[in-house]
Amino acid sequence: MADSWEALEKECLACRECSLWETRKNVVFGVGSRDAEVLFIGEGPGANEDEQGEPFVGRAGKLLDDMLAIIGLRRESVYIANIVKCRPPENRDPLGVEQDACIGYLRRQTALLRPKIIVCLGRISAMKIIREDFRITREHGQWFEKAGVLMTATFHPAYLLRDPRKRPESFDDLKALQAKIREVCEHTPVD
Ligand code: URA
Image: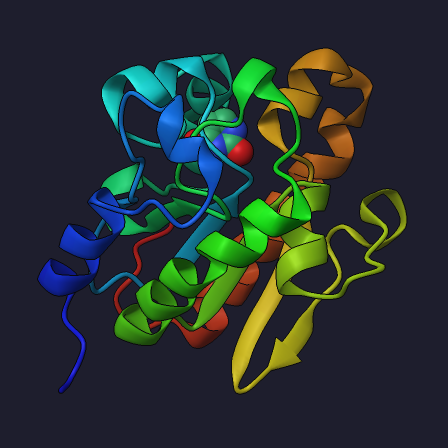
C-alpha cells in the first residue's frame, strides 16, 4: 500500500524501536509544508523540542528562523525534521543504534516530500545523509547530488551560538542556498 503522511506520523508517534522512547515527553516528527521543495535536517530534539513536540523551537531554533529569514525563507515554506525523533538524554549526540532505528522515518518523510534540495544542519546530519566521513569544517557549503536530490550542509545553529566566528561562513552557505533555490525550485519564495 502507498505510504501516507498520516500513516507515517501515527507510526512514528507510537515508536519504541530504540530506548529513547522511555525518556521522551513527545516524539518530534517534523514541521513545515508537506509539499516543500527544501528539506532541512537537524540532529535530534533538545529539551524545548521534547516539551513542545516541534523541531528547533529553542535558542538554536530562533537562530535557525533568523538564518531562514536572511534568505527570505519562513519555516512554513520549507520542511524541518531531524535524524532522530526523540530527545537523547542530556543532549548527547544520538548513538549509531538510535540513528539506525530512526532513519527509516526520515527516509519515508523524504520519499513523500520529494524535495529538490536537502540542507543538513551540522555534522551528525551531514554524516548520516551525505557521507559517513563528511567533514563539516572543510565541506560545508559544497553541493552533492544523490538520486537526483541536491544536498549541502552548513553549521548547526547551536554550534553557531557557541562559536559566532563561524557566522560569516554560514552566511556564505545561506547565500549559495538562496541561489540554488532560485535555480532549481519552482514554488519556494526567496527574497
Ligand atoms: N537541534 C536539532 O538538531 N534539532 C532540533 O530540533 C533542535 C535542536
